[in-house]
Length: 66
Image (cartoon, rainbow, N blue to C red; front, side):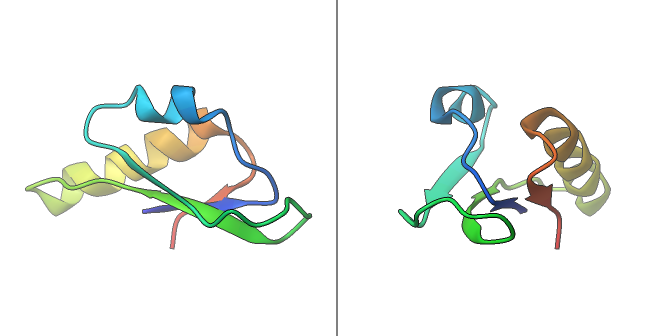
């Protein structure tokens, strides 16, 4: 899971990733506010973690991996 903080990246960019699910909380953007998250499923924990790191780098600076 990757938290989306402050602003929402373009949904079309996010949904282009295989297996990714976007959860938009429909909140107004604001610095430091969690406005949604992306989640995905992987069979192997190590691969899921590396996927999270990759997504966070490519989605942008307004993300956090719990």
